[in-house]
Image (spheres, rainbow, N blue to C red):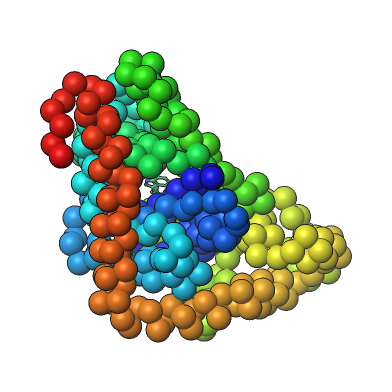
Length: 334
Ligand code: TYM
């Protein structure tokens, strides 16, 4: 059995990037035979950036409802909040003690923060919390505590999974073969979904399209995607076009080819945007209805998450930590 695991940080409203990079492939994987899935809300990771408790709670509810609306079946998939698996921060410390600091220095998110400080003439580490620095170690603990084989993610997370492999390898080398080395599962056509301004769609760039934006807002946002100033009838480049890349993430191979020809034939931007809106809305609107129903039942979602955490700890996390505590020389707590 292949174990597939992925998480989303509860720092905001789920967007189309989360959907195509993680939720859609993960739900598809969970429906294939011989796969055991672990999908979770990374609420400990959220604390690195978000210091408003209501926002973490709201985001947890929204992301949980999004997973469920997109077809995650909590009776078939382990579905839980990271912060309720108390073994994760414990394992995170074990991994901290084998992780090379030099490797963490090279993490993209940390480096970007240092570069920003330098550009602003500040000290390298000004206003950077140690949580940001340790982020990849906590993420490794998420993956390794359940010995996941495959991790469906967008391209931005690949480096973190390589780090998880590195830490797992070091731990195995020191203490015996405890961990499987996880692999990223990337869908090439959607590895980095662009946002409204053409950069990677990301909460930090404020360029996202919320997954469950009401239809009118969805349309307005899609019409605001950047394009160049080429007039109708002028051939348009698919290369580097955010509009085309987003279309590709939602269309079949044939539809994508037809759109590529339409670009070459000089389709008007307005027409291309309308086609994109219709394509996305066709896929999302049945899910949106489910989402609206779910989000109105926060107690039901709470129950699902609490039950999921309890069961997955009992089934796996307890025994794994028991073994790992023994391996490093700590007393058995059970
Ligand atoms: P997060 O919350 O930033 O994003 C969640 C998932 O969405 C994907 N994603 C994208 N994919 C394609 N195009 C985009 N523009 C785009 N934006 C986001 C991300 O690649 C990710 O798969 N550290 C993780 C959460 C996490 C995790 C884990 C993931 C914590 N522990 C263990 C996997 C395994 C994060 O912050 O993702």
